[in-house]
Image 1: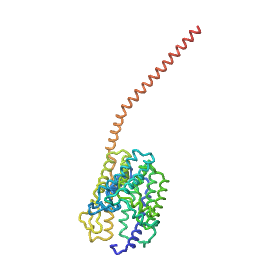
Image 2: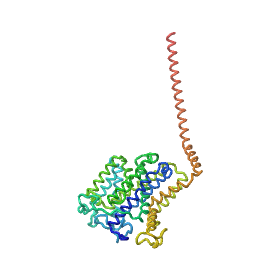
Image 3: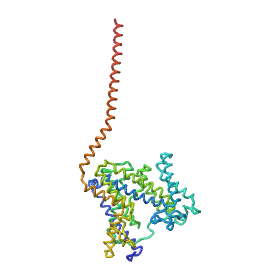
Image 4: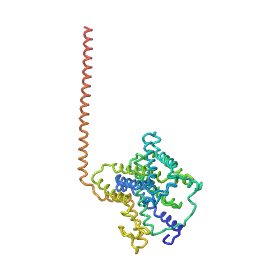
Length: 446
């Protein structure tokens, strides 16, 4: 709009650019399995999954404290507005307590619930937290209101308005960076889902799943742009849901897709979901996102961690976790903040529009924890040779295992000797009884 475009024209240019750039992700899906195996071993994917969980856990905490918008500048003068009629500053006690109630319900179901309840604890946690919020008030104000459900239409559909489709050339490079980040997220999400589904996150089947996920993501995003909506990607939260519910059935996935379509058309249901207070939703999301971190840790430890792997993981997490904790370390300057002097690539008023778009796209990519961490892990995995110290570590670990198994071997040997002695004693007793029987027969015959 700052370039003189109207809202409809600007949105049409965005949709058109998306439909062109999304095929980068489809191209990545066609990379041969041998290259994928060499570039992305399990511990590299573990770094990606773990950093996705770290970033999303931070988002969950933002919701838990009251909302994303008010978390950026917490103060009493900046109230959170996603919790019904209650508008308090970020991190206020009522918000934290309602989010914690979901945690308590999760714990109660895990300890005392039946297998069915434990496998569906996400539903019970959300419904229980929603019920508590619906009954609770703060100084007469309610956390749950009926305004959204009352004001929404009963049915809705996506194509309620059309936009003139075109391409905005300066946005192509930033969009390519964005889809590269999306591809890394999809790669990690598919691997984490495999792990949660108790499928081996390696081999040809793993490659087919990853390639299919990337291609499906690209096609779905293309049709989403045709439906006038922004790009979509794999949902990292599902990894935590699969791990908790232990349901990895494709039939369940088809059913979820059908019901999501129904919920999208029936606007009343969408309005009810939006009426869930942000703090309640944050309590559930924080726990689910933390499960993604655990999945990443498991992937990192899928194979033995030698000195080389240790260094690659540590260096990657240093950049990824550091960026997640301090986003200002590499955040791009956009709009009024474009001329900040404390950026590693500051804005220059003499920059061309294309170069500035490239600058923004690159800085957004670097400012994405799982992207910078994953790229670092891939590069280090390709350039660091396998050191001889790895062989020494293997020999030491084998020696430790032999020392641990030695007492057990001695015990097994003693047990074998005792069994053989018992068998010999039993055989001697049988021979003695047989000899006595023969002697008595001889006496009778005499």
